[in-house]
Amino acid sequence: MKRLDSQCNRILRYLQSGKTLTPLDALRRFGCLRLGARAYELKRAGHPIQSKLVKRGSAHVAEYSLRRAAP
Image 1 (tube, rainbow, N blue to C red):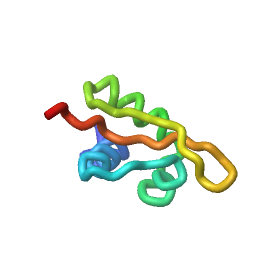
Image 2 (image 1 turned 90 degrees about the vertical axis):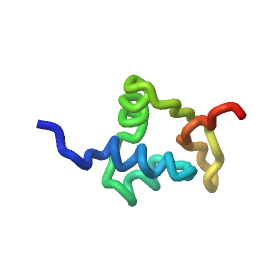
Image 3 (image 1 turned 135 degrees about the vertical axis):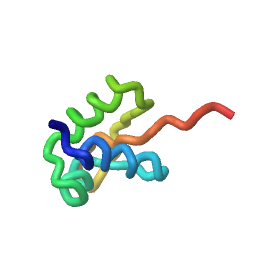
């Protein structure tokens, strides 16, 4: 049985609000240790998840967001 408020659902709602998410943010907000895996699951379910590398301090990390629909 699938949890009604799964990590994927919470992450999707967060991204749908127009915010971006990094792995450290996901760990802090959702207790999610594998944001890349959750993003992959959301992509497979048909959601337009995109990622890009961004610099955070001295490191480069993936930042996930939802692609906006073309006007």
